[in-house]
Amino acid sequence: MAFTGRNAEGSALFLGQPGQLTRAISQGAPTSNGPLTYLSNGRPSLASDGSAAIEGASRERAMILGVRAGEPFVVVSEGDRVKGEHRLSGLADPTEINSGRLFVEAADENQRNGAYSFSFSAHGDLGGAMLLSREIEVFPSSLTLAPTGRYTFLSLSRQGNRGSAATPVVSDDATSL
Image 1: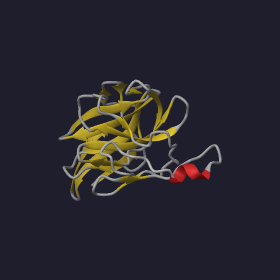
Image 2: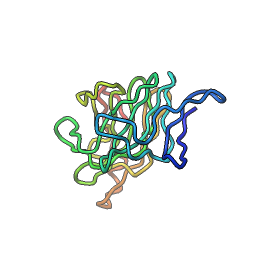
Image 3: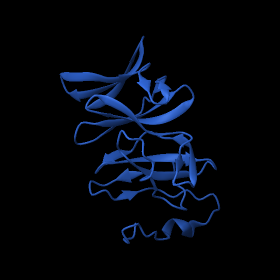
Image 4: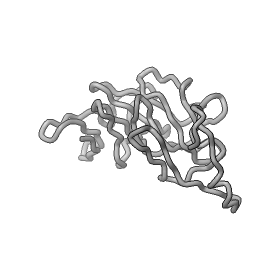
């Protein structure tokens, strides 16, 4: 179970089993981006091993935080560059953690919303980060995952080209998405 709670001291992420919840991270906690000043009220993503991911911020810089074995770590932050191509300017609540990967929607410097996958590790290595949606812009809050790791999202077309949503995209493993 994972959820955020708020009291007079601020927000906190709670993890555990019913009756055995622990406070995993709270506002004010240190991160590699500085002290945690915000935790999203959105739904945290919970992995099968009990680790979790949640959107947060340090001052004005949004980030996705992971918590594994009680230890918080930054997965990705606004301003990070993915594969030298896209600088992230906005992050949504994490969608899911699956097979060691974190799936999340994020906007780039051109305010194009995309579906991204990041390694869910405490190393902060963006070398394995992937823009899953490629040239197709993702309609906000539409990214979903199947237990197999396959993903879907709704297309957002700013050009009125209805055909672009039906264009097959071949994934890195040569299967059609």
